[in-house]
Amino acid sequence: MKLLFIAVSALATVQAFNTSPAAPVSAHRTRRATIVMDGKANAIRDRISTVNNTKKITSAMKLVAAAKVRRAQDSVLATRPFSETLQSVFGGLIERLGGEAADLPLLTVREVNKVTLVCITGDRGLCGGYNSFMIKKAEARFKELKDQGIECDMILIGKKGSQYFQRREYPIRAIYECGQNPNSKEALAISEEIINSFLSGETDAVELMYTKFVSLITSSPSVRTLVPFSASEISQQGDEVFQLTSSGGDFGVERKELDAAEPQDFPNDMIFEQDPLQIVNSILPLYLNGQILRTLQESVASELAARMQSMQSASDNASALAKQLNQEYNRARQAAVTQEILEIVSGAQALE
Image 1: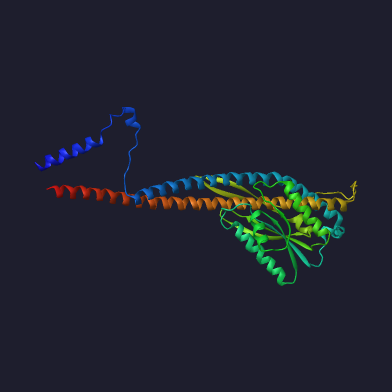
Image 2: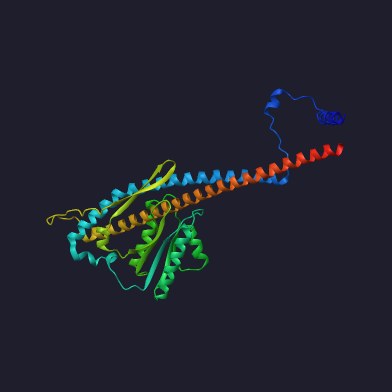
């Protein structure tokens, strides 16, 4: 008799809440089930959705960075023939001139009283420690020169570095932006500033600080002297190119070292329309422009590789967090269902 009373009560309750007319079959098929749980479970469900959306964004940013690395790789390969020809002609002219080339202003080593640091950073963040490593290295080099009693100023390339050093009132000579696709026009503006500063006597040496691209997970902050040039270094320095590869969904880098270009052979009876010294003097700015463009491309590749690694780490962390939240969500849902069962059983027992 008690069971019959409980069944009748449940039927009356369902009829009381189902006063509206029956919905069409199509509407019933498209209707989504409403899960009613406590606030904790709903909050966890919302957070899982947010984490999954964040993972989609970081994965897309990784793929975009990989595509830009390929573009940087193509730019390096495109400038390689010009660099080889320039190096070959310069080496042949140096062999032809012998010791006469040492009198050129850009090859003259003088007493160093002031040094200009050219520091290359990025314009954007979300690339791990790429910018902070270079900024720390530039600060350490600046302090080292100051401790030696040498004056120092800076040419800053990239918004992150310029903002950092401007806030701390470092002596800054010039500021340039570093886009994701460096071109010869940007490199020409920087090289002209360097050459004019050196030839006018405003600085005695120019050091370039950039991030050398090693692999997708490794980059090395490097320092090299740009001006004055070393004739032997220009004619004998090798090069290396990198190529982005993919296997099984994972990205990798293949590096290939290239030997220095062979000096072009100029016979002794060859007559030059211009003085060979003038030709060498006009080649040096072109060489500087090419070196700056190459280091800009390499720095951009390092920044993009660091961003790829950062976005991969962010995606992995999002996956781990989503898995943990799913476990918490399942526990909360199970607890809610158990609580409802207990309430139903308690209500049935109370009616007995």
